[in-house]
Structures are given as structure tokens and as C-alpha cells.
Image (cartoon, rainbow, N blue to C red; front, top):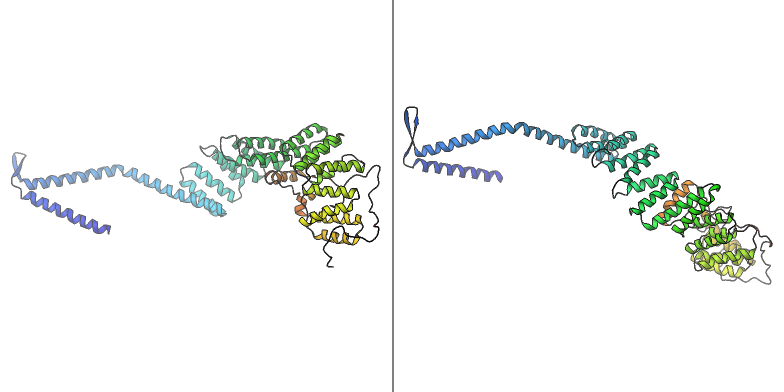
Length: 476
């Protein structure tokens, strides 16, 4: 369609020129001009046509002259554009190959891009990505390091260099790169996360606390998560300190409790430190504070053990203080049932446990029910609940207590995991709950022997036994 209109336009232009030439030739008169010693006369129309043709020739000549003058520049520009297109294509294809895991293609395209690309930053970016795709972390770190020296490439270069150093196993260099990036004025949150993660993985709790404070000021972490993480970090720091630094450990635990009272390990270890100093009342206060915020069976176990060989009456008073601080919580109801069993109130304990079992029949509750029924004097029903415990679901909180009665005995990796499990989610599950460890000891109270009283023994039933509550008939 375009060619047709062009053809019509040419015909119209030629026709208009012919008409104008005919009109010019039909005009009367002559144009004279001297040529040497002679006077030459030319028809006025022919003279006009000649002037037009001469102007066209001059214009054509001028166009050719200017075209020849600018031709080298145009050739150079076309060459640059061609190289740019090739470089852009190589860069795009190389980055895609690196992201896709085609290490050989990425390396080949990186070499091609380095021949054509003009922007040094793009060349280094592709070189680094290609090296990473080939697991050449030393080469990647070198390329990222060079990128940090170029305008606009410092933040990206530091991130890549930190990642490459971490992959090489050089955590110190990775930490330094992340710290350099954190000092930059940027809204990127990866420097904080990377530096914090490295420090936590190494168990460097003090530096992790400093980094957490820095990230909190920059609003790179939510306030609630920051408080929870800080509580874990202070607790981990206190637990890892030697006995000669008892005051520093107690101070760190105090900071942990203030940051997140609902973190039971801080209350547990805080009470343990106070107990070793003979400050039983203060330790009980810490346990009640922790129980009020978030009841946990380990806190009750610690309350039982505050005074070795203590009387049953004193232990019951301390446990009742815990239960009264948060009376409607499930753990408080369980603790009330345990207090009843300690006092041989088997019927009262069974009634409490029966309501809890209806909500969720866990292995722990089944074992507690087995103990209560044995004390009541119904061994057949007790055996049935014991069998149910073998297949019932476990309780995550109980996994924090080992068979010896110790709780929250995390190693460095366990505390590092807890920083995120509790700090970001509020989760307290011990790793052994995820691996293996059914709480078959959940029905046994882990406490020191009493000083002046023997163990509570089941009362002999008088007359025929009657069940304190209705149970479903045993289908066996």
C-alpha cells in the first residue's frame, strides 16, 4: 500500500513538473547574458528550467559532500550500536544461563560480554554470576569485590562478596562485608539479616544483640520479634557464661525477662541462678512472673526443687502460688491436679484430668490419669490409660524437660534455632520433639525427696470401687 501511494506521488510530481516546464516555455521574452565577447540570448522559460536544474545539481552535490564528511562517524556509531546489541544479548543470555544453572553457557557468554560491553559494572555482574554458577566462589568474590569500587555497585558487590565468602567458609570475611553494607545509608534489609544470622550461627550473642538493636532502630525488624529475639540472646548468653561471672549472667537473665516475660527459659534459668544463691523467695517470684506470662511445666518442676528435701506442705504452697497466678490456663489446671495427687486427693485430680482429656488426650495427660487411677485403687482402668498413652499425641512443651528433670539444656545450635523459632513465631518446641522422644516420664513428678515425710502411697479401697467419673467402656 505504501509503495502504491509513493508511485502515485511520483507521477503527480513529474506531471506537475512537466506542466510547469510547458508553462515556462510558453512564456514570452528572452534572457541574455555575456559569454566572453558575445551576448547569448536564451528563452526565458528555458532559463528558468536551467536555474531549477542547476539548483538541484548543487543540492545533490552538497548532500554528497556532507554525506562523505559524516560517513566515518556514522560507521563508528553503527559499529558501537552493533557491539551494544551483542553485549546486551550476551549479558541477558548469560544472566539467564547463570540463573538457570547452565554454568558452561554462562561462562562462555560472560567472556563474550566482556569483549563487547562498555559498562564495567555489567561485565563484573555477569562474571560474578557465571563464577557462582561454576562454584568458583573465589572468582565470584573477586568480581563482586571489584564491583564494590564502581559507582552504584557497592551495595550489590558487598552482598555478593559476603555470600561468596560464606560459601567458601570464611565467615569472618562474610561478617565484615555485611557490616560494611550495614554502615551504608540504604533501606535494604539484607545487611542486617546477614550480619545477624552470621553472628547467631557463631554463638556471638553480644554482637548479635548489638546488631539487633541497630536493626530495630532502622525498623528492619518488627518490635515484637526484636523483643523475643533479644530475650533468647540474653538467655543464651547467661547460660553460656562461666560460674565465675554469676552476676553478669543474672543481669543478662533480668534483661531477658524484661524483654519477653513469656519466654519460659529465661524465668527457669533466672530462678535456677537465684536458687544456687539461696534466694528461694526471689526465685519463686521469678517463676510466678514467668508462669503468669506463659505457664510451662519446667517452671513447676523448678518450683518443686527450689529447696532440697523440702516438706510436702511447702512444695504445695509454692505450686499453688504458680497456679493462682494464671488459674484458667491449661497448665495451671494440670498443676492443680498434680497438687491434688501429692495430697492423695485422687478423686479431685481425676475430675480435673478427665475434663482436660476430653479437650485433648495427650500422652502426658494419659500418664497422669494412669497415676491418679492407681492411687485411687483402680488398676484395671489405670492400665487402660497407660495403653492409651503409648499411642497418644505428644506435647511439645514437655519435650523441653529431659528424663533427669533438667530443662532448656540447649547447645549453641539449639539456642541459635530458638532465636528464630521463638523470636519470629513464638515457638518453644525442643529439637528432640521433632526428632524423637515421647514423654513417657510425663506422669512422674521430678522432685527431690522429702525431708520429714515419706512418699504418698495409694489408699486401700474400702468396699467395692466406684468410678469417680463415667468412662467409655473398654472395647477389649
